[in-house]
Image 1 (cartoon, rainbow, N blue to C red):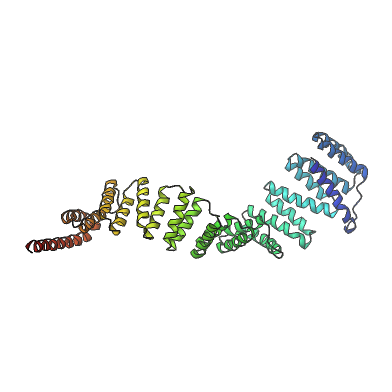
Image 2 (image 1 turned 90 degrees about the horizontal axis):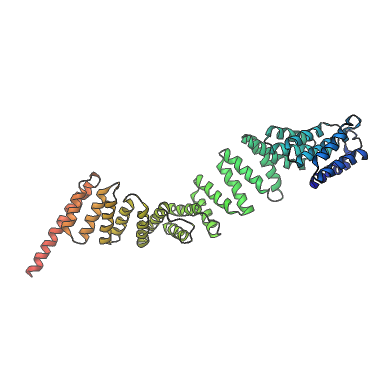
Length: 417
């Protein structure tokens, strides 16, 4: 409660130097009145708030003999006492009575009006906030307007009038930037307003300032995300890569975003390396989504052994044979024919393939490369049963038959020599 007394005293003392500046002569605050107000506050400070209020009520009983300044200070003490008890609506009621008194010191009026605007804001009374600020601005100097601009912008934002909110917060930031940077929460508000207005290019501009001024990991990540939404993929990757080097990417999703950016930029080896390290460090869980990305990256990077291992691990978590089918293709391209056959057969066994005929083609081609002609022809014959694979299967069948005839001819020639 002592802080309440100090605040009340501060308002009283702050008012004194402005008396000479008043356009209306402010009456004096008599000592006998102020001493009773202070005694009420001291009573409240001991924990007896009801006793303090009772003293204020005794003072109020003499209201007809009090001047405007004394009445204003009475309402002021009432307001701070209710504020100290977290009775905000009552505090607002009494502070509003302060500014209704006339004449009173300008500093008391101004401080009370701004406090009313802040309290109304906390009570979600946004129209009242704006009304109090409008009264406050009447006697505020140019240099004082900034704090009101920020509060007004917050009120307009809460009212979802984003166009109205943009002007005051932008003005406040512009003034602050003349000597450095604005307060962090001002940029946060401006960014939110631009986002609601759908002006992503301006969101990026604000975040660029926030990255420079505050260097927080979340701002790097958010800026990268906005670059991605704007289609500036090179900037997105550069931002994510720099954040990664600075140790700012500690969340799994952020790591995945970086890996995907590398992949889309056709830098698959870095994509795979980033995912693998995150898995090793426990940042990423070895789930199906992550292992698929890892496998795709290694496949694109032509890292066969790593791709095969990732595909095999991912297949265990899958409900179909598609990943085994991909593994079969990778193994075939790597000329690991026996392994390719085994993977293709496993894919068929798991089932639910988009193109099962492809697996019979893989088996047939692997058998052909092993010069196992009859098993190859059986596989191609099976592949022909599927419309998607029929044309290629027919071509490979003819080619296999030709190879088989040539092999038999060579065998006969060797036997005669």
